[in-house]
Image (tube, rainbow, N blue to C red; front, side):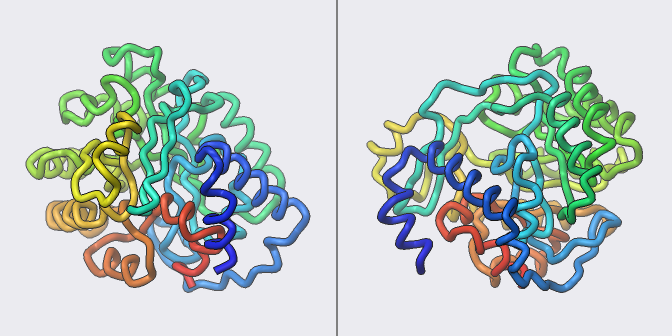
Length: 332
């Protein structure tokens, strides 16, 4: 209730990206002075990817792009933190404004454009984090194509990121599904995707490798990706990323149109994300992990995803609307 009041009176009045940075500063500060360690985050141990998680629910890529708040997010009760998306070459992302709230839909539109410090800097940060001896959640590293790298050179770009980051990751996620990097989604075509995945697997040091797909793929394309994942021996599939559709929104069409292009996230994704999960589970061996993302806000929705065949569940947008203890509530 307190967070909802703070959000309504203060945070919702701020530019969404400014509010995000303020929130990151707040949770990092609370962690650094030991406040978050006072939380009781007991959750049942959960097995996936050959790893032991403190519950099934984690925070999706996009919230902690540069591995700056991994410890704090773990202390807040997320069983795993997927950092990134990280690119081989550091980049500032797209022009601002690039993050928008649709409060009536508890949704976000973003066209951040993979703003991040680059694989080399993030790798050093993760190395220091591993060496610190601090208690960490499971850390996934989500990698994407650098904007300046031509699509035809994507394989080497992903391979470089994997080589730098794999030593410090618990798992690697190959992002070919963000709508905010030109040409990126074309890499979901299995002919383009296969050499990227093979290259990442070659640098992964035996760590689990997963591929993250868009909800906007046709069912036929999703099945093809599932068959490719199985044939290559991937550890799993993450489904789904944000959507480029603008259907079934309460927010007015005029207001949504004024926000412009970008990926839409929030409850509007729930139905399609669940459909994709069921389709993947039907076409993947049970040994292959599915991380279900999209539209999850409540504990019964997490359970629904697990019942439908997900091994892990992630969220991001709910953190903005429900506050810092949201992950803890879902995992307990």
